[in-house]
Image 1 (cartoon, helix red, strand yellow):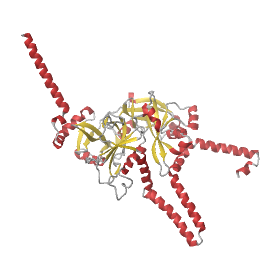
Image 2 (cartoon, one colour; image 1 turned 60 degrees about the vertical axis):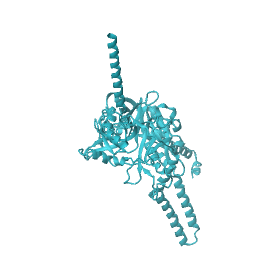
Image 3 (cartoon, one colour; image 1 turned 60 degrees about the horizontal axis):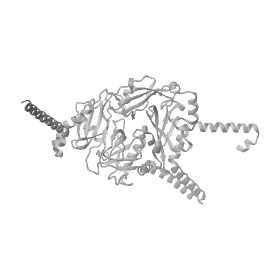
Image 4 (cartoon, one colour; image 1 turned 30 degrees about the vertical axis):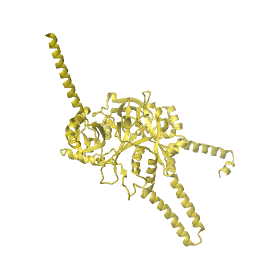
Length: 549
């Protein structure tokens, strides 16, 4: 038909050429709009091909059937086959099951015999930080989701102050002019003065059209990446030159049979204002510098950093249910299968980004930020801590895990923590106060490496779904072995060990048959030094008196 129209004359040829150019430009410029469809084809290509083959052979056998009865039978058989596959893959969950198994096989797992130490504990939970940030901006602004990253060697919550999604004109015209960067270890973070960073970005998560982070990054993809990559979370941090950049975590889909997501590297967006040249670049080739997952280690500011999408790390942690084999999570087994415990009241679920010191515990692991998961048995009534998973937050391949269940440690899991905290303070109004984000607190105390769960008490207004940020929140430490709760002072982290020993020291000493030297090594050293100093002073005095005489 097109050939016939082309041969009609010059006018028709011009029409076809112009129409072709318009279609080509639309496909080229609007690739961020149809990229989700390309990803859908990538993820479910095997299933789609399977359905097509069933329909093809079903129609073929239907046509070859000699009698009407056979035609009906073969038609019903074809439809039943499609329905059965659909039910098995999605209703029963076999698609997710196989996808998770592929993730497990892709991981480079290493079991560790000793827990790492936690450090630089963050005080305020995610939702408190978000609430306090919104208390510091105007009506036409909003903040991007807070992310815990390393800035100048310190752990900071960073977020962009960007135009609100309710105000379309600002989203089209304005730039991002300011960032928040507040300490994660401060009980009372300030969203003012030195914590408000002047930085101009023409690309942002709330900005419209080609200035939107998702759209700009997708426009930068080459044809192969359009089918295999998708942008996810955005982080704000400093690069190796000390300049602020927006780092977008990329997810790469791997495999043909039941494709699964992995860390695909990052796209780095530099600062800059919105102008005509910037507009043309975004429209035609997008924005950002692509750094592949295998090249991330070449950039110091991206190593030991938090750039891994939580969508990827959650699936990696979930795949630990296959630790005892492919069939262990099935209903008739479940001997060692585990799950991620998600607490209903906690609006920020695992993973919790935590700073760990692996030196002395694992030789080939870095000291820095990790996604931590505390996995529990699959059953709803089982709340023990089975496995601790440490996933490098910079996307490094190796994943570390500590198997508490195999060591028969009998530790309480995250699901058991809220009730223990509430029971320890019966005077609290637990209808408006909630213990949230039970993250690991690991210290060498009383001659042993001990695991606690650190929780922040967050307030929630009546008829509100959001937690309110307190200037100085209450903190609770739960000894997961002894199931006892220690209330600690958020403003004096240096005294936490003393507070723990004051409450639990004698219990440990009696239960574990510890000596005073095991329990209070520092105190005994101080006493010894005082005695030695006293003896030395007394001896010097005697010698001095003798010489005087």
